[in-house]
Length: 464
Image (cartoon, rainbow, N blue to C red; front, side, top):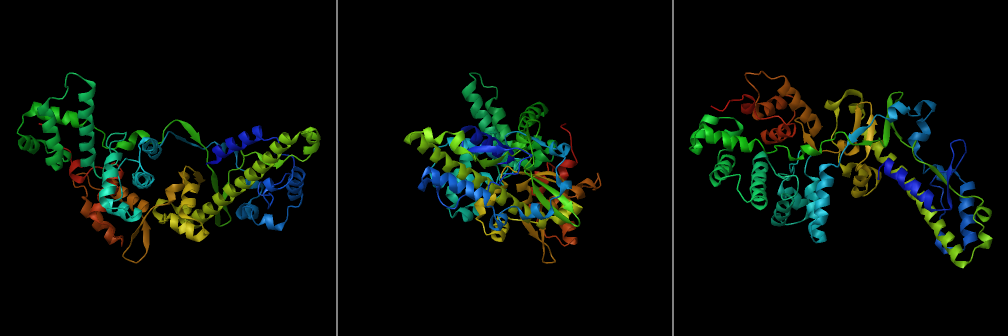
């Protein structure tokens, strides 16, 4: 959960648990990681409360080691986050991955098939395209390619139409198939005559290069049609969405508050957790009088005992959330210091396994930690998972971030001559001169993800 969800969870616990109370700002209260070492459920009520309260009073060096080391060493009065900065938020709606996962949960799949399908969805980018090959997914999940292909076909039937396609051609074919099937179900009269359907399918399936390059004269000849019919075909295709995931771009909606801030202390960048909205908790100290324990019967005393167990678990969980979040943020900040200082071209490739190995955590733990979390940096507000991406080999033996390569592609195309735009192979050659090894096919994928058409498409022709 992110910091706002954690805040709501803490407030809910406060309202339900009589043994938890909030520490006001002017009071000196214990931290959430001050919790008993034994399971309170195994003790009597008096022993439970005595143990909990003693632990709060005897906060020692060992517990201090569990607290956020960077915040303790570097945080000064100047590190208090200004409310104006706190309100620097992104605005978001349900993202594409969440939308697909909701539909996946409605599909009646075995646990093994669900896990494979979830992995496929995890490799679908924000534009809605599958960015891993079937072979890669099969290898990672130790599953036959045929099974991965079967589950991909299922996902390709999900909303939005065209999602899960491996390229633009497949994307358009999926949308046409769903569009024609939907119209057959919803209307008695067919708005798309059989000939128009056949011609549109043929244009996409057999003459895609002519279509995307706007070579309409050649396309008209290939289809054996006149201007009017060709315009009907083109008009139908133009109603399709080349980026199925575009409707899930981050726009106005629910404000997202950063979970971590990155500040510069001297020559170093350090992460600071956003704890301003999190209530500080402690166990009710005068529980005997405030809860009138002496007047309670066995059932009530058992209830209080259970609440004590729950209070202990809550405080430990909050401490664990803070500790893991900060440790992961520290690795990201240390690894990407040049990016924070100089910008996108200095972003380094980072994988979940790199952080997991460094912190001796499971990869899935790191994945959950960065999921739906945001970090406010000198370069803007980013999802934490933004920093996890593949790297490409350079001719010098080092690795460069795929995001950096994508930025270079974008800059090259922005500076190209309008009358002689770069094709993908030329871009690959230019990058090779900079000692960055990227295949023509990879360049095409990056270009498509940026919403940039091919070179011949950029030299647009008109329908005659």
